[in-house]
Length: 103
Image (cartoon, rainbow, N blue to C red; front, side):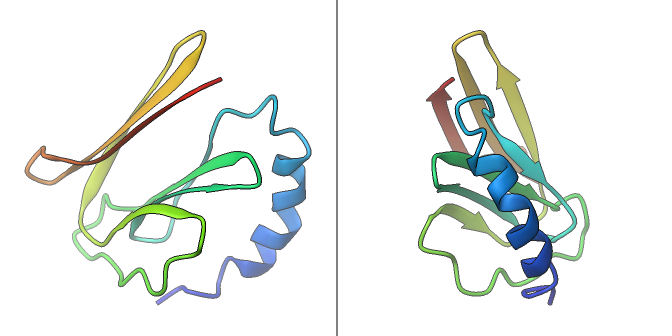
């Protein structure tokens, strides 16, 4: 539904993140009613908009996409001194994605 809405913003903001990737552990974005986790140019990204009953088709995943789901969900992010852990849960509280990386 919103496949192209964020393209201009992404192009404008992306260089701000990639230029500081050694200091950015994770970029979190919302609005689009899907779940997507990707890793691009040394930056981890999560789009989470699954708090709605109405979710969107995620379209064609990007080459850098590591996980993508079209279902209602919520995300727990735990930040530790040396790592970040992410778990995404569906509406039945089942884990649909999890990842962890050093920071």
